[in-house]
Image 1: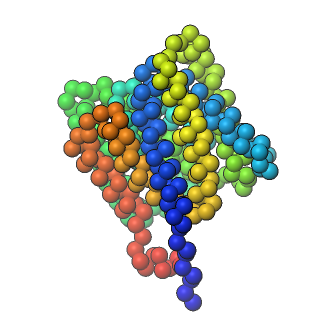
Image 2: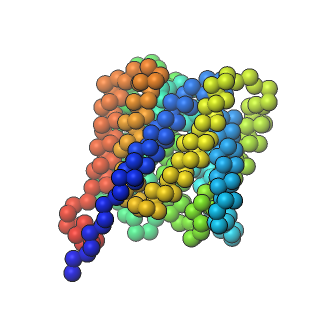
Image 3: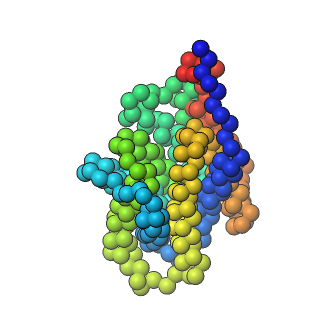
Length: 304
């Protein structure tokens, strides 16, 4: 018996997917401008605080509630650290030295890292030969992007590039942890994650950066608010809408859009030069992502 064909995604979902990619990809450009006068730890703390307050207000306007149970909250702490606090800080620090377009390209390894981590730490998610080949191609693209900088005497950038790559891997760790979360309100546990991440970063920023004595530029203040409201807060709500309406498979296409849009924002609004080396790295990483997610027709029919 032939399985029913999955309905086509609505034009609204496609529009929201492009909108979400544009919002998330713009964060690299805004971070680049903001970290000039606002330290990465403080930027992360402000961004998380704004998003936590915003999502808590939305939660209060709905019938959904915060999760219950020690196990769920323990996992929210881990996701808050690996999915928000750590990567936001690493990416912010990385962009103090590297272009926002480079950061966007490096972040494209996140889904590839997820495939690799899921292979070892998630039951029933063993990587196929296509997955492993895609990972190799994608990480080859990272080597293309990072290698010459280290070889030509500009090795100081390599640590900032590695920091952004570490942020991508941190997101992947968070994704694997999130797959094992017990059932609960999606909005509720997202607020819980933001609360946990904010509770980690506020004391760290106050202790290390002493932000009350800082005099950031006005664009840095507005940049931090923008990052909290749009790429962290509103983007989370759009994410809920897309996952609920179309599922994770449709949503995964955003991984192809974000690095391309991130390069576009940096080149068009910050006048960043996009080298042939960066374009080649982007093509390799996106090709690796395509190969890693490729499924032969016989496999698709077997799972229909």
